[in-house]
Image (cartoon, rainbow, N blue to C red; front, side, top):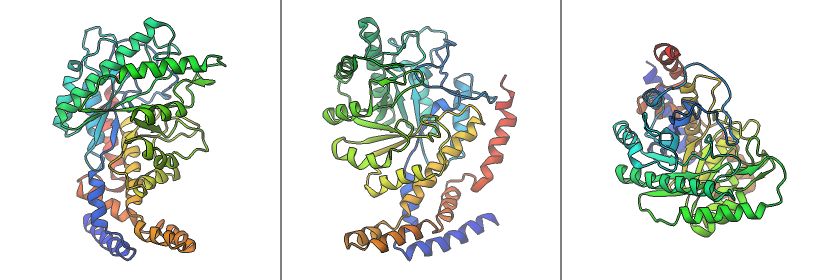
Length: 418
């Protein structure tokens, strides 16, 4: 009965959208092709599997102690697979270096090799997922306040070697999956208080990156990520937005825009069209910055919706890669995965359903009133009926039905973890 109601609602929505020049069937096909890069660290609070037992450092913090955190690779993979089963479409998985399969072997970060991720490559293939990757500069005895920009030659060389090896891992992932693995470089380097050596540290970071990117690969793509500041590093960030835009534009590197890494009044959506004029592609890390980079679970809000609309308006679905980056340890972690991913997709479907051709025609003709009126009317068009059909076609719970599935998994699996 519910399936019939969904189909009836979709038929009405299809007709309503056709009246403003939008083909909902085409929109469903387009959304099916958009793969989110799910972040592995939501399921274990960015702990990883190095067996160090140390605290999370490097200007980031996971807050909360909700029970059921994944404690090993098997549990992490099970949690990711369960979350994926409740998210419509086919998606990627984004791994940090600290999630390698090291077993009892003591592998420091400048020793990591592709073999430590062979299990992930096999598992991802079985799951129908592609892998993306990240170097990991935080939560290590040599992290401190400075890594790739550290004046201490030994420490700097350590992190250069680490990042060089991570690129080699990403290359092997890309080869195995027949699709480039996108590897993100983010370092927390900065200062808690004022510094008089801004230029020095940025010169060192620039040199480190040049050395890291010296080897050219065919099966991975590099992206570089800025930040405003980190916790405990509030006064100065070496890898600022200005630094990385300059570096990316001059080196042809992809820029990563994390929605929590900018000042509260900045529009991340507004940055996309500018970057795409000067850099080949853009990577997004989508979260919800309640108070700056608080990494709350993504929801359908104005910021995420505007971000998705800008991607579509720039005709950049093939140039903008969408990854998630939040880690909320205060609520059910699998539920957090599902809510955030589905919210991002809901924003994408609204963006795809926008009557863009008509809006562009109004704008070209100088019809400002008509453009504004249609933008407002589009907000109340029945996009949710199209979303329900997308879920139905993908065989995942429609509407709030996924809540019970998450609760069942908690009862049967995560609640039994001590």
